[in-house]
Image 1 (cartoon, helix red, strand yellow):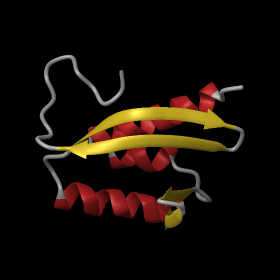
Image 2 (cartoon, helix red, strand yellow):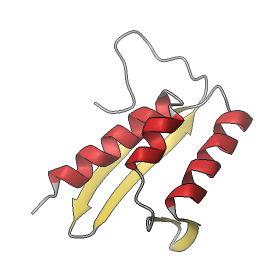
Image 3 (cartoon, rainbow, N blue to C red):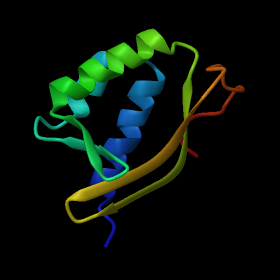
Length: 97
């Protein structure tokens, strides 16, 4: 069964990332969250994830997210995405369909 609450949380996290909204972004992160890439831990903890977001936004201000896949299972949400340039999106477009 899909956990819609978890998916909605990740949707809101992506939207906060798109808008560079640190307050909303950090509020959506659990303190014990872990981010994996290629099977390896890349970020552990909400504060570390928020700091990584700030640094990424600073270093890549023109990027936007394109979400290719979003799914949830018990205790786990997977998100497959691409960061693309330029950041400007067409009117009415967003990171998530």
